[in-house]
Image 1 (cartoon, rainbow, N blue to C red):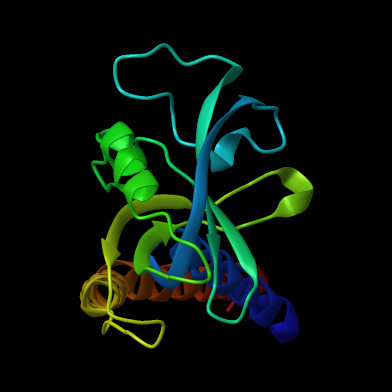
Image 2: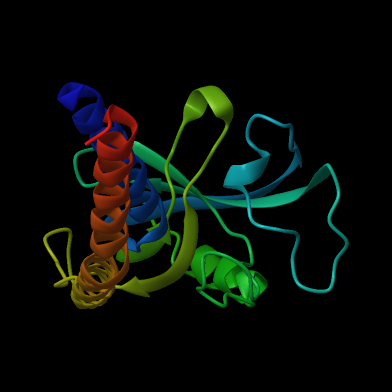
Length: 200
């Protein structure tokens, strides 16, 4: 039965790791090749991967979706959506998707005269489900080899680890003060009852 416990713990760790990988900000160095707005139908399969409609608009099953088309330094393409997150989850408080779309259009460049940018985003790209990472911020960088140390991700992970350590210590104290004495009391009562039943 020990392997069942390890499988459950592994599944929980994979779920938490996937959640953090999806939610925490990532940064890509890319060249913007164009921007577009498409009409998207959000189905039950991919609905949870999209933010709500832009702030001030009603949330429906289909809506206009802003896309930012980019090329990576190695020549691969990547596409980002550009949606407001509002005050929901994840807590990026992004309310300026129209402004970000204008910035992306202004930073569009060609391969002959590239303008490299750093796109801060969250989410995954899944072509089969038509899911795009959501661009949160764009800023110009000097070249394709620019990098930024992920301070925010490290701070969030350290705070999460401290919170989990606090919960673990809280559970240990609860176990020592409540569960262990209760189990001991039940075992003693059970032993006395067995002795009484057996006539001793």
